[in-house]
Image 1 (cartoon, helix red, strand yellow):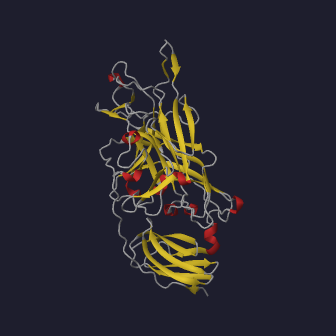
Image 2: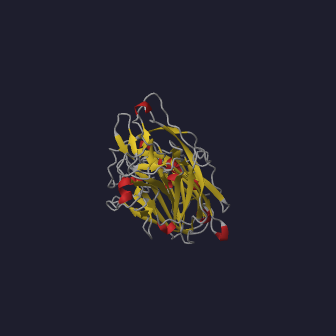
Length: 464
């Protein structure tokens, strides 16, 4: 006979956190995205348990779609520019200028949102050491110009450049907005942006990719969609994966006290078309009929990325984890404004912004370091949650390997506690936990059982 540990779990109403102060980006022009040609990272394989070697891709947008902001996400594209002078001419003749200099993302593999993706078992704990093997991101590379005048009667090939920078552990500063919503930016130890060159700095490593043709094996030219409603008005982006440098890793402490368990990367584009100060500058996108282009109009190559805006009524709220999009907009690339230097957290905008990125990580099992879930299974394990979805009652079956102080909590996806109960000096054994959920609002929750230093979690869907 299984012992009954819990007879009732009280329910509390869930309040919404106050909105963090935002940067007003609502007036900025939004560029239409036709779609992504291929996304090879949707079919992910789950990690293995029990200390075996593990590796998998994490789809950041897939995670964000499980959050409070997920229902309001809309996909667009935006463009990177190497200076503030490159022109974007809209179909109505309006002249705009490139506004984004560099973008990227900070990754927190402990985020509870992973529990609601197709691979909930891939969530790490604070006891898991891991390394970043590869990154991937949505991009579009439009190559308008292959040759330029060398000034001596001949031509030279145009070589564009993409820089991919990486940060790890204590190089990433963790912070929070006034409402408790967390975010992160590089860099805690050194300046993370170079105003003179409009480039990231203070990074762990940087890779350089030279783009000398439209099909280079890493970034291929994307042709724009001219679907009878203008020219250069819609784009199909692609996804490129890049092997990360050696050493982009995080080492967890044995007692789980290391808080510097984040990794990050960004990408920056520099066109091989020189800017001409004080003269007609290069046009990177011309949405009008090419026949109307002024004589001698200079063109430049450009590089874009997949951008998701939160256009819903519910904002981003996460008071426990630090998954953070990074955007270096033109004004912040030249000066520190309102405390933001170079990279601005995507959640700081009133139309919250998320960059389509992917992280491939492996859990380090060498030297006795744990694999995914190994620590959690050493002391406590949730065997089943039934029924799930539930209405007014649910039963959790669990095993406690060693005697321990046990805490049972029910939280929403932002980590806000609905209820918490403690059971000191609980002996080892198998237990049934009948839970009364009749007073809990419909939604998605996490059942968290902490035994000593170890925690097991399971998703619970409540319907009414």
